Length: 467
Picture 1 (cartoon, one colour):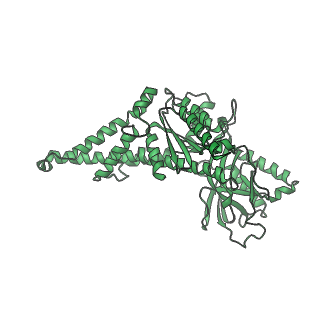
Picture 2 (picture 1 turned 180 degrees about the horizontal axis):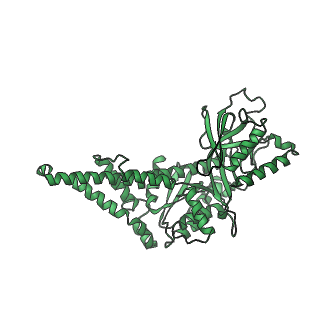
Picture 3 (picture 1 turned 120 degrees about the vertical axis):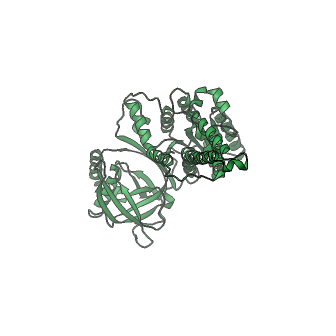
């Protein structure tokens, strides 16, 4: 495709995607390499948020979708749908996850865990988080951030436009207005009219109360909005980096989606049956397990706490190939640019098993390395009493593994139990069904972020700061 044709295709795609965007959304270009569309939603079912999420994701066909949810909350929403329970809350998040899964987009969970959010808010209310009692600049910054969240003077999503489109979406913003009024009132109360007011006993008591209110106000805004905006923006940036890597580093960055079962007995049955089949397959001896790390090894000894049945199967197969013991066994590790797993119901209509899930991982095989298990320890999880294994690994240096050519390209596959495998490959990588055609490559990768309406402008501002 010629450069002129690429520009025309890019302009057509941008114009088409702009027509699909509702008033509650804004667009940010991240590091000049990825287009981010942030949709502000309301988590209650009386709004149009769920339909808007599905429509935008279907219209844009994004490379990745980041949703303001964690895995536990998604499991709860899926269980409610499976059991036909009424779901007045979270329909927009479920619709976004379902549309992302069915459009073959990467799905990333962008929010903190619910328990972590509740702990931070409880720390604020219990004064465990030290408030900025006398830092007026922090108070002004909190007021500014709160005004930005409700769309006052913001350059992104404006409250007036959202109200024209769907008035019901303003209801969740109502609790933010008292915070704004109380913060402004407390700030005004800390400024005495005259010097005589400073020595007045009544005014002194009012000042103390006002300063306490300012501290609580600042800490609450920081916990509810600022920190969550930072977490969401970081998750969006990570998804952008993964989408760009899949476009620009196709020789080393691979994406694989695997199905696995969360039951220990079923996973063990698969492991034993696959081991029996592979005894007759000569090519199977070249396959080695690969574990995708959240961050790459940097020469240190890393501890892995593994309890999912698929990873326990990985360790059992690893021990079987090493004479029945884990210590001294060798496998591959590689950094995961993005990884998530989703219930089967998101991908299938009708009946589905609550135990079957799909894992989606983007792995950078260009930074893969062989590791050796230094030691291991068996144990059980405290609540479920299910098995867990702790293993300590270290990267192997040159000369430790003469049987493997570190420069040989690797091909990525997966074991029927659900973990990843690699094998030496001399053939260049071919395009798979996740790759884009020439017309799609003419435009920047697209990432859709589905967040609460109060977070849209904050996340957009944080992404611009990351640039």
